[in-house]
Image 1: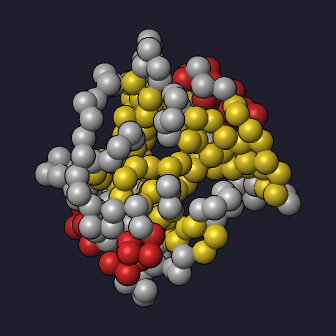
Image 2 (image 1 turned 180 degrees about the vertical axis):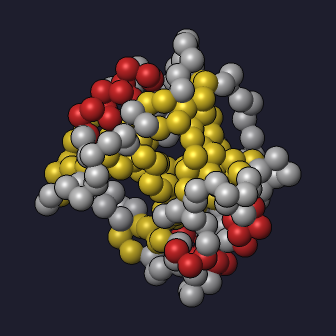
Length: 205
C-alpha cells in the first residue's frame, strides 16, 4: 500500500479560511484533490500545522522527528468548488536543525526516500514525495533553527488561476504574483495579518 498524506490539521478560525475563498465543511475539512486540510478551531491551540494524518503505514506512528503523526485509513476522494480555484496542496514545509536526521525519520516512517537536495546560501532544502504524485515534503535546514525536533512551518496551495485567486482575495491581503523557484510557475503569499496563523502561499499547478 502506498503511503499518502490524507490531511494536514491546522489550528485556526474556519471563517478566516473561508474569507480567502476556500470551502470549509462543518467538520473543518477543506476538500482538495489529494491531501486535504482540516481546520481545528479548538481554543488555545498554538497557531500553525498541528499534525499530519498518513495512510498506507502498517504500524502506528505518533511522532516523526517531532512531527505529530496519526495513522488513518485511506479516505475517499473529496471535491469542492473553491472561490480561489484551489485544486490541491503542492507541498508542506518542515523546519529542522538537522536535515539528514529529519529526512531519515520521514523515510523510515513512510518508505519515501529523499529525492533531491538543494543548497541556497546557508540554507539546505531536501524533498520527499509521499506516494506517486502525492504531497511534497520540503525540509528546510537553516543555521538559526534551534537544535531539537523538526516542526511544520507552512504550506503551498495550487490554484487554477493565480491572478484570479489574488483578485478574489484582494491586493491588500495577498502579495503580487511573481515567478516561483520552480520553472514556469508563479507564486503569491497570503499576508500574515490575514490571520491564517501560518505561512500560506498560492501557486500555479
